[in-house]
Length: 458
Ligand code: ZN
Image (cartoon, rainbow, N blue to C red):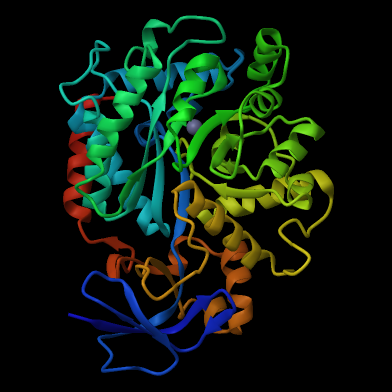
């Protein structure tokens, strides 16, 4: 049965539609968008709808360790990305498929309540605790799809090709759950992963290489040949040590080597790309490849600051991701990204283009469009007839929103808002989160608590 939601306003590519009546078919696809109602209104929503945020980089299991790597038994020792990784490996080795699914379901429910409606899962925990394949090669990926379906978020499952422990080195014991020894093993996994997405209409697959240090050149080439039109995700140049190791091994910097060795195009989503030379910044922008920035995780891990201003001036496009999930708030991701740039350049106008001086709108627009591409979704309309209604709704009763003209709402939200500003999140026309409460909150939380108790890591 069709239904009509009335919003105080709805953000379109040409500005706010106020009020907005959205008519949908029974699957939640938009069949009419207008300022007057085509039929009786099903629900009056006292809020402003904006497109759901796209979370372009996630390792769901790492949610379980949020905050744990902040305890330093020896405060005088060096703690960095590589010591954090040891904690992460120990957790990755300990989870069974049920626990893995329960943690992901909790995380995805939390993502929805923060306004994300789609996630790209950069997934590399493929095998059992001994490193043996499950009977279903994509068992763990299937669990992620199931978690997304239970929570009600869209998912792009990106099974990750992870082959080695470092440039020219075999894998270490602790990486045994991640490993595809050959390109053929990985391609088998990709096929199984694609099958795992068939049962959920909001799931699809991408192709992923863990990093240049984790897969050899020939195997990357074989995998890329199979990418066809899939989005391609790869961690790159996150850490200075990784840049130094790449220079040692390939005599080129990571992004330099990638651009010189493969045909990099707009289907590529380079995760982090923190440490770049000027010519690498230009090279990424000219290739049309996107970068995926994860500001809260990059800050937490002490990675460094991406050269955003120069990249944007050359037409570079970026999305956001929550990566380790130390932060889950898309507004905070945008703010940390912007403020890192302001603090280092002493200029306030970072999120602007020649045609758009509204920084809140610029940040939301960039993260949305590049984020959708990271999911293999080329739709650039915020909302469009024929597309599902996937939206986060800003509460029109929040004091600063209630007193703002529509053109000030987005910047007010991005720079002063938090989760309490959202009255709910809608996917395919249905509320998944309403009044801060996920529809399956009690079950999801109870399974999460049970699994965390079993794991005894917190
Ligand atoms: Zn990552």
